[in-house]
Structure formats: C-alpha cells, structure tokens
Length: 203
Image (tube, rainbow, N blue to C red; front, side, top):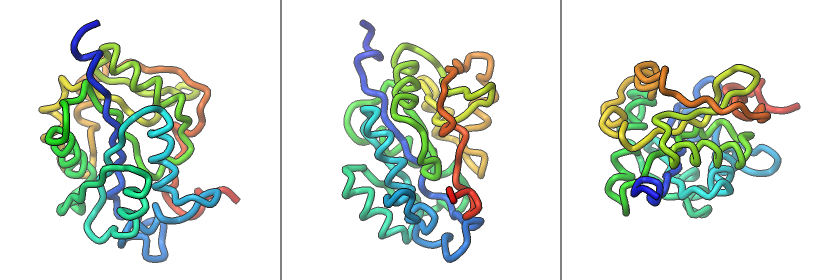
C-alpha cells in the first residue's frame, strides 16, 4: 500500500454561497441552508451524508452565518469562515483547502460537496473518496450520463485548487484535466439534485 492510500481523504462542504435566489432573507446567515428538509436543516443533512460516508468534514461558510456554524459544529463538523466569500465559490474553495492543510495530516485528497445538495447517498460519496484514495486525479459520479457532485480531487492538485478564484469554483481545474477524470456511474439522482430556489423543494 502506498503512502497516499494510507492518508485520509477529507470531506469539504461548500456552504458559503449567498443563496439569493432562494428568497426570504436567504442571503444572510446561511438562510437557505437552514431551511428544513424532512425535519433537518439542508446544510446539516448534506454534512451528515458526508459523515455517513466515513469522511471527516470541514465546512466553509460566509461571515454572519452564526446559526449555521452552531448547527454544523453541533454535528462535529469543523467550520471555517471565509471573510471574502462574496467574491465567489472559487475563493471559498481555495480558503477551505488551505484550512485543511493546517489541521492535522495532509490528506490524500478532498471530496468537495455543495451544501445545497442534501440528497446525495453516502454510498456514492464513499465511492468518490475510494477512487481518490486509489489514485484518481479527479473523480465524480455520473447519473444517466450527466456528471454530478460531489467531486473528488487528488492532493496532487492542491496548488491548482489553492489559486481558484471568482465564481467558477474548480471548473477550470476540472476542464484542464477532463481527460483524466474518472466518472463513476451511479443510480443516485441526488448527485444532480440541488436546491437553488424554493421551487426545488419537494412538495
């Protein structure tokens, strides 16, 4: 077994978006992610799915998300606040990658999930983590031919992830290495289901 396969794959939950399209004050304090789905806050449910997959989870939030921070920390999630999260998802991603570098052993890679995607099955997340642990540069689930989330990244892409900026997240990194991405077919519609507006909530 090589050294990287012995290191853990870290879970990252991106929870620093404005959520402005959700309405009703969602742009402040993580409002959308506090909305309950089946009796549990959306952001908490997303974190629990990652934990159920065996990952230690670090969430990145925007300033003023005090209630979301409280709930996530109550679940055992490490939370870091990105002061300039308003500049885009890429900034938040770079921030949380840097944060994980300063806490414990350097991971073999990261599984990056979006906090507004609460229906992803833990088994799917585990498959992505296993692929990264086994040496995949980038891994992602595929549902009926559509690439979904979460996305796994090898630690060899650390420097590229640390310079992500703007609102594109890791899209530039994924595009650059598209030919090396490992797509894992799954029967999990949750990988393509996100809650963007209230219309996306189940009836």
